[in-house]
Image (cartoon, rainbow, N blue to C red; front, side, top):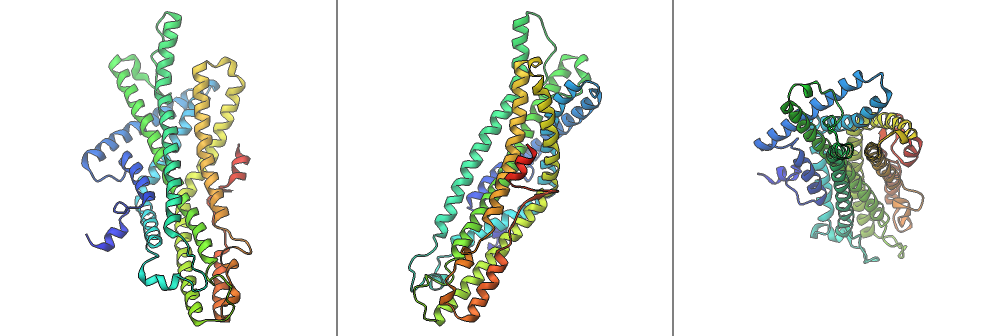
Length: 403
């Protein structure tokens, strides 16, 4: 395999960001080239889609019973968003892999900034302190590892609640009432096959369990991918502003210097290249997420309305149903908060104010032509980047508006 191909393949990189994402994606098998992994993923996908179909039929059949319909919709909203995320990862796999390749390329360039060819340009005669690019990369990598671990543990608890709570409720009520109850289901849906034979019921419940686990794993994969890419983008923008502030050196020596101008022009070109790559990364990521986030804002609004109505009648709900209801609400709110929180972080990190970034560089130590180049760079880097979802810009005010 050639070196150029190794650079373009996101699976052949030592980047921690890429490793976190690829580990999650390989777990659900959507990009797997291994035969048995792809077969397992396809089987889980069939169970997942069949379960969603049963939920849709159940919603139609229970349309006259508001209590059951709202209960079914709370679960259906989680599964629906899982299906949309799965379609995005599978249908747009080329676009996602391109993003990961760009991340690898950007990070490799930052890790190699201190090589001999760049050292003369990156070292100031009047400022011995350089920007610690490697240390900066490690900082946001550690943050991405921590957030991905927290997300994985939260979703693991969620799937455990999904699968175990209905079964626990069945045995508890049977023990308490001393009489057999209707056999439990992990996910609400249309299940006419329960009356045929116990084997049919068992197959249905097994299919629901597989669908629940696979749905949660899809959410884990997609959200971890989104969060790590956003942490990477914010970290790179932050590093870019710090680096661009040092384009003119420390500014202590105001005497014009050809060497300083060459160094400044080199840094301007490097900052411009990095900014273009980051803007392209954010734009492509926003294009992949725009429709999903637009649907998600609509679904979460309806879900919160149904949860609020059911909580008003919480005295009629059993303890188990109340716990499940709160679990669904917490899952939806956490996902919405994640998107808005990191969308807000991107909005703030990508914007610069007067005195920051290239606006804070020591322009007085540069010649007039170099100052013009610095002004053009500052104008280009002053535009905010953001994630949008239809009528909403994904930030914390949007989260407060919806909730």
